[in-house]
Length: 360
Image (cartoon, rainbow, N blue to C red; front, side, top):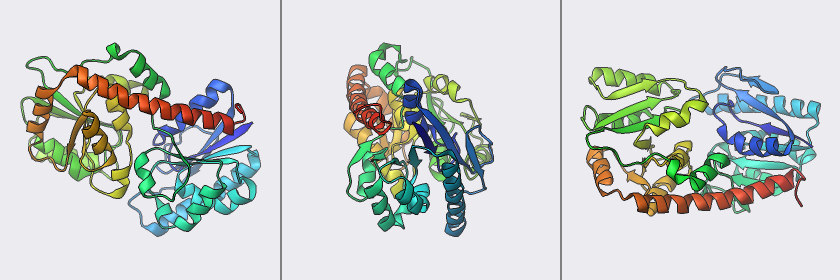
């Protein structure tokens, strides 16, 4: 059994591929990763398609890029003769539909992580749902944007970290800060959405009880503009770092008090569960997220963070959260939510093993 994992972007920006590769590595399943190198990172993989395509490009340029990538993939797949495919992202699936229908009906997983061009090509996407072996989604919020189908939840989460968080909660650092210490608000990963990040930074600017940090790669120049704003407004309690090694991420997060996932209100953000959302739960770092979204609903329902519509009076809201914080209640709610994710993962893993013909 050989499986091709088709990514719609760089490997660095597709950490969800590990939910498959971890299972395949554990069971000795042979697989290749094929990816779209949009940022010229030249990451090692079986197949790399390089083209400069950005989310800010016009539709025509982006569609042309994905069409070319789909042709590249079809040739690579024919050459390798994969038995099964994991097709990550509707962009790839839409353009590969004729090839998939002819050669891989019932032999590919359709993996959905973000809203994309399927919203414009819903008729074709329905056809893809009908010929795939399994349809995975990474957030229940996506169901409001997709056709009715049998979906399996595939969380953007390391199962090892999930089990560790459930088995050894005492190893997680306490959220309660020592008297006189500062509350660290961390934004880690892809630094995008300049306006929201700027609002958080300025709401906490030079407040003696807070410090903010932006650590990761910037997108569309968001990190550069944030640095410029901090200099112009003489913000002293902010820290910036760029690229970091993935293995260093736990240590960086452990130093935080809150994880910032305050996003703008748009359908793609309203319905998705971000990597930071999971990190917040795994590492016991309450989240700052957007009200009336899937993440905001979880934060409110389980009391695992603060859901805000804007950054007005953010410092006061965070201080109140900490003043009212009850560690036992937080831990109980956090574990209940993670247990539900573990149940989702077990269903996902069973489906992947059946797909790879390792389980009846």
